[in-house]
Amino acid sequence: MTNLNILTILSLLFISYSYTSVEIENNVRKCPCKYSDSCDIIPLQKDKKIIIGFMTDLGYSFFRFYEMYKLTTVFLPLNDTEFLQDFLCYAHEQKVSVLLRVDPTLKVVLNNSLHRQWAQETIKTVQDRYLDGINFDFQSPLDFDHASYYTSLVNYTCTNLRVANKEYQCSLNMPWSGDCIDGRCYNVYSIAEVVDYIVILSFDVQDDEDGPPCYARANSPFYQGLGAVVVYVEAGLALKQVVVALPWYGYMYDCLSVDKSNLCTIKERTSEPYCSDRVGKKMTYNDFVSLINNPKANVTSHWNSTYMSPYLMIYNGDSIQQGWYDNPMSLSFKINAVKQMELGGIGVYNMDCLSYIDDMQVREMWNTLDLIN
Ligand SMILES: *[C@@H]1O[C@H](CO)[C@@H](O)[C@H](O)[C@H]1NC(C)=O
Ligand SMILES: *[C@@H]1O[C@H](CO)[C@@H](O)[C@H](O)[C@H]1NC(C)=O
Ligand SMILES: *[C@@H]1O[C@H](CO)[C@@H](O)[C@H](O)[C@H]1NC(C)=O
Ligand SMILES: *[C@@H]1O[C@H](CO)[C@@H](O)[C@H](O)[C@H]1NC(C)=O
Ligand SMILES: *[C@@H]1O[C@H](CO)[C@@H](O)[C@H](O)[C@H]1NC(C)=O
Image (cartoon, rainbow, N blue to C red):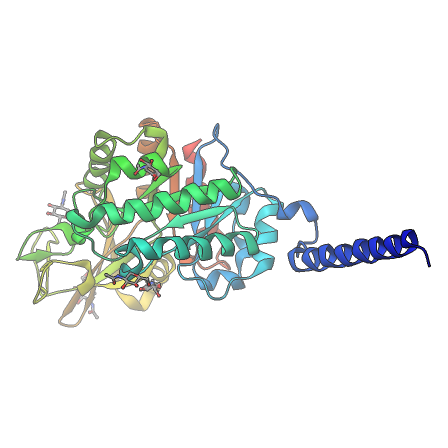
């Protein structure tokens, strides 16, 4: 055997070896969807209004009933452990972006030397699942002196995500008010520089109220909610960077007393915030509709023009309850206002608050999203 032959054989071996290794690599990364282009990244469409659907784990059993074509983006459930690749394929077939929703722990946020590892793991999850980016939804309180740690984690992660692929999206959720509400402080202006857009969760507004006495109030009051959005814009957010998420759920409260104008006094908490929606019971839009449609429930429906929100009263013997929620009418007012303010778009929190066998409910709620365009 000549040297040449040995070299040829070796090179063939080498080629076949490297071929095998690429093959293995390809097998691991093989697109799991029916159509291979469903694994392509769906980038942010800059010329369109953003329309986001928040999802919960429940959604994995009926996502095919979502009116997906009305959305630009879905945020996966927080700390998603049930992730279903079929869902990603389905969303991508309809050119809807799917973002990984993450809540980093306080321990990670406050330790700069943990940022790198956290970012790498998170970016790897985005890549492995063929997702389109990250949605930051840090839920822990963070005082103003420590707000820059979060900015730095978001900056590091989003910068590296874009290095992995410049089409990936980075977004971040903030509570209804930028005023360190619920002890959550943000460097709004700096964060806006590093993310594509900010989603303002315009609900759970009750927490802000100083009291006692405490009263049942709207979950997403029109003027207060949108007023707080204006404050965010004044803090340096570009209009197009602001997306307003609205609730498809509400709260039911037990009234300690009710006056003639239906003002319902509720229990106060023993620690701050003394007046909070946490004393109420969270209920989905479908829960409210079911109550209203139940002739045995003794429900009366009302409208409060201060909040531009519907509410209902339930009298049952000596007990009185008041429930606050959003319906197509209250959502339409807010979505029209978001449009007039020329903000970046809207979101729905969350898509799984409906009964998808109730066609009318589904149609009426999803149709409100059309008002943004
Ligand atoms: C998500 O996970 C983090 C860390 O494990 C945890 O602190 C946080 O409470 C979780 N959030 C939810 C909504 O489960
Ligand atoms: C930050 O994380 C590093 C790496 O895990 C660790 O060695 C260090 O003790 C942590 N610092 C603090 C203040 O917890
Ligand atoms: C983001 O990080 C880069 C690199 O460390 C830095 O130059 C930039 O100022 C940071 N941006 C913000 C808004 O913190
Ligand atoms: C709406 O409800 C709030 C609190 O429940 C109350 O203060 C306000 O007066 C109500 N507005 C009207 C027009 O009844
Ligand atoms: C039903 O509600 C009305 C007020 O809307 C109240 O007067 C009546 O007592 C309630 N009926 C029962 C059975 O609780």
